[in-house]
Length: 134
Image (cartoon, rainbow, N blue to C red):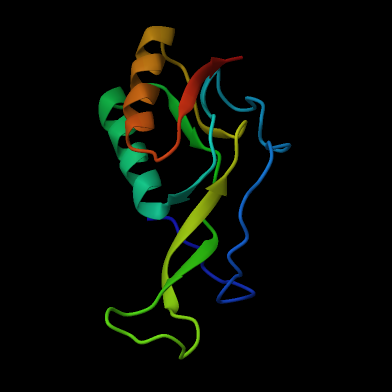
């Protein structure tokens, strides 16, 4: 799964993502893409599940890019731990996604196949998405 090799700060604050994305909103590598329509945190597990489902569907056809990287640490306190005692340990990493961000890109396949592959990937993600072509 995707996670950073080295981090400057082990724990981050819980900033909420607001507004519309300004970076990563256009297709750069591929002809087809999956664009976010909502705000959420996409975890490494969700991203990996979507990636595997697309690659399994394509069966070595076409080229596939992941345009986001989960680098935000999400902390979790243990079960039945009382209030106080500081912040919990890092549990997993996530990517805070905002509307307009391209998540995946595809190239080298027909549009109907790309549309179906990205629909399968979108089912694995916690955010509403739409299919875009360049």
